[in-house]
Image (tube, rainbow, N blue to C red):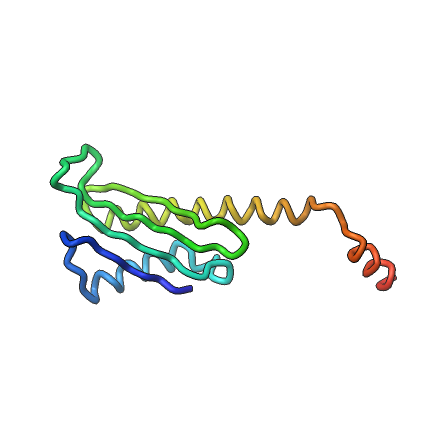
Length: 122
């Protein structure tokens, strides 16, 4: 799973920030690693807009194999809180999406090829 980190001009990007983002994202969604090809991380400080829920924003977009990209975001008073909040939201969203994919696979109608394989295995 590749993690790409992007910041706006208001966030000073450094190795410590990159390491923190990677550890939080891996802790939250590492168990889905075989299903995720890439995670895009976008960090920004919207403090000039004085939003009520905090000026720091973290947007995460995960590319999940066999599914549309999943994007979530979180606003918080600190950048670390926004990263943690977005990671938690992404974990729940991926869990839900993969659960739906698994359910579709369980409830699909068997094809002629599946029936032929079952007859051969008997």
